[in-house]
Length: 115
Image: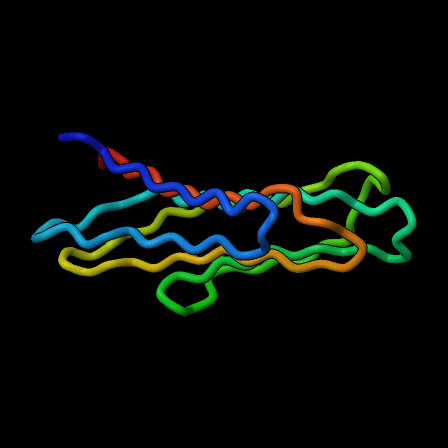
């Protein structure tokens, strides 16, 4: 059996949608990773950024943090395990927001586990 791997690279966009398609008669478990990297603007007063993750329209996780490293980069990562039921699509969305920062990269990945 080949394990599934799904990825959406939003680049500098602030939203990364990912659909894990249904598998007939088989539930699967995935390691889900959302990775956000931002550039902190050098002249920003009190910069901050946040990353949120939704699964099938429900918020699973969100974090807002003060941005560090003015003139350089900062980032947030999120990891969880996700079970996708048999015969059903799963819609995952990562969303970035912030003040005094610019999104450099937003990537959402789902790797099927062998368990």
